[in-house]
Amino acid sequence: MSEQITLVIHGVASVDEIPGIERIAADAQISCAPDLEALQEFLPHAEVFLGWNFRAKDLRQTWHLAKQLRWVQWSGAGVDAVLFPEFVASDVQLTNVRGVFDRAMAEYTLGLILAFAKGMVETMAAQTAHRWSYRLTEQTLGQKVLVVGVGSIGRAIGRLLKQAGFKVSGVGRTARDGDPDFEQVYGVDTLVQSLETADYVVLIPPLTDQTRGLFGAAEFSAMKATARFINLGRGELVDEEALIAALTSGAIAGAGLDVFLNEPLPENSPFWDLENCIVSPHMSGDYHGFKETVAEVFLDNFERYRQGRELVNRVDKTLGFVNT
Image 1 (cartoon, rainbow, N blue to C red):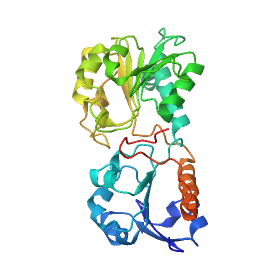
Image 2 (image 1 turned 45 degrees about the vertical axis):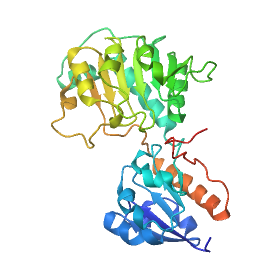
Image 3 (image 1 turned 60 degrees about the vertical axis):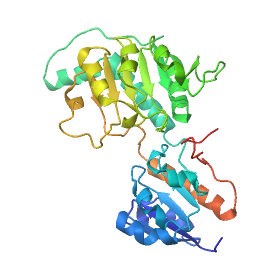
Image 4 (image 1 turned 135 degrees about the vertical axis):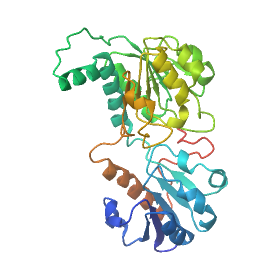
């Protein structure tokens, strides 16, 4: 390994956009690639790649230039944007920021559930209209939540909702008993059956070939008419036409959506106008100070890499997530 490591940071125009990056200035030769053209220039010489924009897919288009690349640090928990076959088959290490967004997304989930249960959308609409909208709301104690995806974010959601008095089960790759965070973990092969009693369904698995299109007409039909659906994972996990049909027909009571097939969500999307749908702009994990935390994960891993030590949050590229 050379004395000074060549690092390309994709998604920023200046190193000043990465909090604390000056800590490695003496050990790294840093190039910033804000766009595809700049990445084509700098990637051929890069040993380390920091993907600051977790949505960007430029690495796939320039992969043939990555002759010296040894490690990719991704600034999101989901790594679907870089799981193209050539990268998966390579010896290049992939790490992510597992754990950075867990608590924030758990709080966001609880917030969405309470917004539905306490009718906050109608409360805000009534306030805007100067309308006195007295009504009864739901008590959530003992309601059942099914968390589809039992990785670190799903577990943080499960723990927080249990503390708030919900009964929480999960869906993972395989069924198992005795889980510390869930009353029961069902296998994904019995997903449809596990949906039947849930009051809330929270979707947060990684996007892989196995989970793409996981929720469609059959899954929404299996849910209770009073149930609400929350997607904080990826838009590609869901058949959006089937979801719109379920919301408009009353097959399910509502949806809280933070992710969509096309982002930003187009102005003509039906989701904007559905009264039983809460739309947010892919922000459930972001909070004041999160960029500093993301950078800290990278800086810690950079020091490990420089010293030849094992990296934190190493992703199993064949699975698409950190396999603990």
